[in-house]
Length: 391
Image (cartoon, rainbow, N blue to C red; front, side):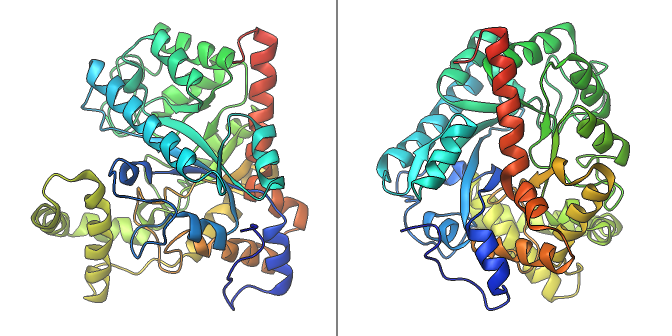
């Protein structure tokens, strides 16, 4: 089915609808991979839960999606490498199972060609440097399998880089961490600074020969989460040619929500207890149930409601700081708690509509929807070719 042949919301103006579906929309971070590990899960079928499947991607005009390869940072060593490989294979299997809809992409040209063929480009990003087991050979293997970015850390430090949500232990990047960044430049892999400590971020900027990006981070000025970026960081990222990809997670969008959670620590205990009761240790179940529980708590008045328009607030703020050439979309679908009105990928056209209503030009909207990401990919590929290492 062509990307244009979709059901759209009555809230979307004809002008926004036309613009949206002739634009290449790129989402740089989706955690649906955890669901793909279930052999019974079919990406081609519309699901009543979660955020991503082919029918809803089609309805939302999503032209390219980076599936995240993720395991907890507490899993290290050969086990981490093996679990990452299993997830890479799971994504590739879905592409093989749905050749009419999906195509594996490793370059910006691949994404453009997929869009021209009315297919969805599937790309791979490794979320956490612990999965290379401090081995550049593993990094090269991942690149050979099609991985086109790596988030240097997840929620805990790795042996060679500090995380934004752990106690600093490496003073940013170690010498080996800098080798990792340089090798990623050579391999044509984008360096992802979401999740890293501020010092790590600045070490990456000083080390990388190519633009770097934040695959799923929002603005710290609007929501003071360590995972978000300060205005100065956004400016410095842009000066290097990079892009901040706005994350849709309510805990990174709304200061009010974060404050409410902190003010009542019993809520987190209640959520944890209820999730364990419903899911046990099944990883793919955890987030789906947390989403349901959070909605129940909002309905009970225990937590504030976060509307999807907060996404627009963060996009607008980042554009004011860095310009429309340096902002994109990194939803964190199927890996975070979505705001009301952005329940799944079918709602993405609302972003185009809102930006048009705010007076953004069509060309700037197309940059934010995916053009900026493709530009960074092309620049990273050019650096890799210059260094003689592009796969």
